[in-house]
Amino acid sequence: MPAAPHAPPFAPIAPESAGMPLYRVVKASLLRSIESGQHPPGSALPSETELALAFGVSIGTLRKAVDELAAEHIVARRQGRGTFVATHTADRFLLQFFPIERIDGRREAPDIEWLSLARARADSLIAKALQLHEGDALLQIESRLRLQGEVVACEQIALSAAVFKGLTEKRLREWHGTLYRLYQVEFGATVVRTVDRARAVGCDRHAARLLGLATSTPVMQLRRVAIGLGEHPLEYRVSTINTAQHELVNQLARARSANE
Image 1: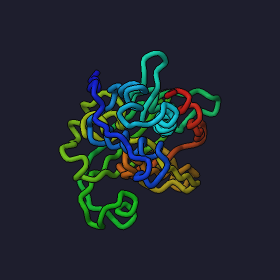
Image 2: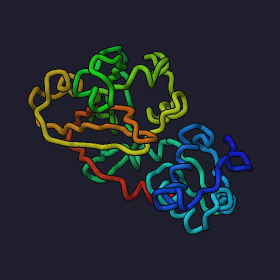
Image 3: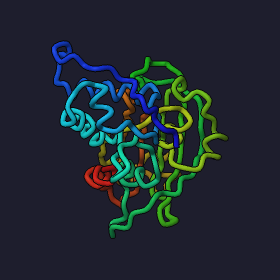
Image 4: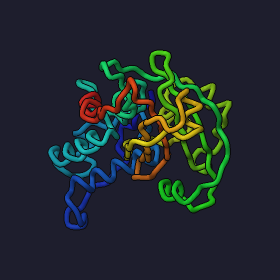
């Protein structure tokens, strides 16, 4: 695990020049150090005492800044060990980013079948979601998800080809871990939150074939924009979910406690 340098690369903050509450200036500086790679995923931040001295602020101000970063899943506190830049793990994916649960409460990570990775161009909807220009180069991933051996969902994922340059179908199939862990480790793109919108729709012909359903069968469609550090959109995903035996469950509160 990479370690943070002992001497924090931070400068004292002049209260009269901050232009905002001091803790927000501290938070912004910490966030910049994480975004720049000075403190990569998994690395420990300097101690609260070191940081407070480096910024020239009180421990209370420093803690308020770190509290917000922890609440946003950007850092994680570990009892007796310190504060670390958050990493994507299988447990975090299941708690924070995977909303499908069997109606009897059984919950597990999906078995993902990668069907294809193709190049495409952004239409107006995807361009808006990813803050691209219409016609910009995309990578489009299609997958099928199984739970307890049963096909439950299919997904279409759109990524900026510029951000994820070098991602190939071979590389995707050979990866062991969650997709968000791949983004973080291989491309320096850390998903910190998602904006999810769900609605009931009739299953279209393509999704029906992948899910083994009749066309127009009622299903749940989940449209997601995954947001990275600095509020940059990283992924646009459309999931079509067979809810005959499964439902969507919001795990945000449980995920937050798991990171603290």
